[in-house]
Length: 618
Image (cartoon, rainbow, N blue to C red; front, side, top):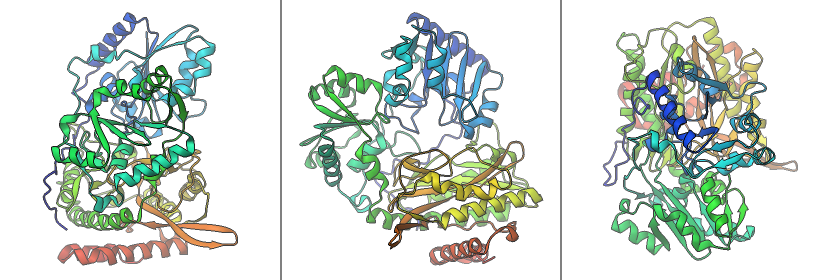
């Protein structure tokens, strides 16, 4: 179970504890905004948009592309900033409201609470707010096509100009980091389960169905998946910066050439994959002149679209075939992933025993806890890094759904209330994401009740049987109903897809109150993570990863079920048994029996005794 050394084990554990680019002061933000507005004036811009995206629409990005964070000091993973001549706004959804209030306090940046009634998305707000003939600016390489397509009609009716060729942040960010240059490495066929050639041929088949002669891909997780390649451009996702152009008879990968070893270059050539320099991508699109090109507007940046149109290409705007192919895990991936969850579960159990032994000592802090779980994972075989920066949150801090440690701040863990830990790992044979809420000592009646209701919703969704064609929206109510009965809700989704040694957040499916028109089908994995978040009081979340499987087929159709892949005990000491139904209690006990059966052979001594007690039936 322990980690073996890899020659290419450069994908490391160096997760920045404080995600700001440098210590931020209110004066510094004011200075940067003034400098940005001076650049806007040069180009006569009325508004400038800073999205949370790079040219590839990546969720996690290297420092180079964190322009919104640089300009505001707001560290959330997802939000959009709009700077006008005399005001600035940040659109944040419910996951980040409390964080935004804390991090933007004292600035002149106004928070827009996305998700509240009558609150428009940033693009619609801009389209309605800007005066006729206004000039709206953003860097076209970092703005996805769909964001502008949604408001194209309004912009045209008001004769609003889009200025996309300038990256004005460069003039303000004088010490802006360059591109990461970590080596690219192969994801072994043993774990990938399918060769790159086989995957590319599947995509070509879909291209032919669409009548496309070429396909251009911007999304880094899709490119890595299709080519069985990984990199280390960000600490928590095995990406490398690249574009991919696919035609019927060739594949060209545009990436920084120095990152490829001679052996990897030869391997790519043998697979019919050409290698060109990253900076030559837009010029290279000239080879597609006049062709019918399949492009995904949700994943493609506006500069890519504009360049193809200049080349006279006919753009076939459809979801990239790789999005669904990637989401449907093959039998080899599933088999290896289950082994991965055993190792990750062992690390969690060792951590849990240590945590409960020390929680009353007065010596635990959030940082110590985070370092401990990160260290336990780092010992494991096939470990490549964390799948996201661990979220160790005690007491009121857990009410922030995406709380993170900051330099100079380290909250002590008391022998009372709850501690929430959301963490996960990247391994050659899978990606993990697990949240557990630990009982640190006495809790209030409300805390025990809310903990039980969160668990109840999590169990109901885990045990769901559902008909073919069911969307995540239809399943979401199973996780929320017990909380809704009490007038409680959580302002985020219930579950997201998970990549396989890839992005921890993966589409096209999800479980949420939003309408996403993608059925959940066998081979898809999705998290199940309901919660309660009460600002200033506490937060509770319990999360497992589920695999969709066939259940039965009758004259009424095909029915599916979930298998829990995550293997880790759930703290049951404050569970209100009277609030759980018989089926929910049976599912919980059966789950713990499986956890014990799968993990016990890999533990011994005190760790094994702890596991046995933690998995006892209620």
